[in-house]
Image (cartoon, rainbow, N blue to C red; front, top):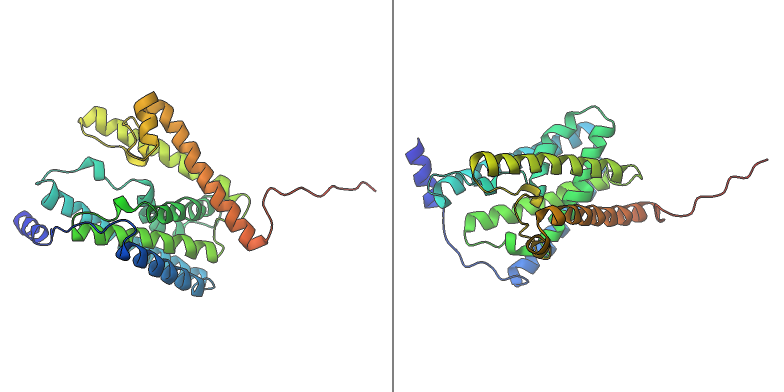
Length: 269
């Protein structure tokens, strides 16, 4: 069985010259993909709760299946039958794979809405930003490039669908719930990083919160100058700030007013 899997993934490990950033493919794929995701999510915004649950669950199942294939591809075709802990599926953009198969079946409440809001405010933001700096999408293998481009476009669809259907991301309390979800996931990611680095002697930096240096532009420099323990809170704050900007935009578009406007005075009679 192992030999057959090895042969199969070696057979599809076609090398390629990565598409240039802001070249024809990158621009067209981004524009057409965003348009398709937006139109589809808008048309599905009024589906029943049952249909919405199955839409999200189905997308999550597709993400899980594709991630299993990617992990096997790395193991057999890239890492020569060694597991790549640095590619373990627990990055910020990996989380919808789990939430899409869990959140729809939870009882409606703060936990479910916090997960939904996380997929709007953090994952939609992350998916969209990845197309502005596409070095992590336009890779040197066809399989990995196709996987990365489709994966992050699905994140855009998930975020827009949850947003348009008003299941998360548009209430004043949604930002708090989404951010607590993010902070909790950062804690889990840091624990995994420490276990793998100090327990197994392998490199892992999920969510880029340390104890390894961040590979992200600007934050990488902070890590090298001041250490990961200084960079990590700055990075977490920056991500939360970006998610808050996303929340303000969504709230304003849906309510035509800002969430931090002046409160009306109460007149005592």
